[in-house]
Amino acid sequence: MIRWLLRLYPLSFRDRYGEEVAALLAGSDHRFRDVVNVAVAAVRLRWETDMIRPLRHLADAVVVVTVFSLGYVVNDLEHGIGEIGRHWWSTIALAITVVALVARGTIEAVHRRRSRPLAQ
Image: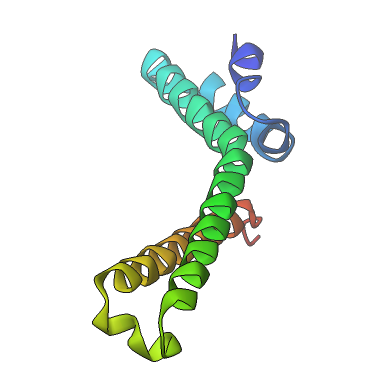
């Protein structure tokens, strides 16, 4: 059952921590609770691993659309970027662009932090 449970984890995790998790589960006093905790953690890690690429692509598409929209809005202003604060539509476009860029940067930072190997 332990080997089946470990197969829920992504291959990179199994290669790095599989033997340790199996040994901990084999020596557990609260086996059922620990098995449930390991299964939940495995599903969560698998979900995060499988979803990061589509999420990054979606964030990239949102950034491209918002930057294009901001460029279109700024093009309609008579005196360029300096007028952004005086027009509600250009202010909204700028705010949405900034939020999209921050969201994309946050997704990348979280991914890099989680994919970095632990210090030994």
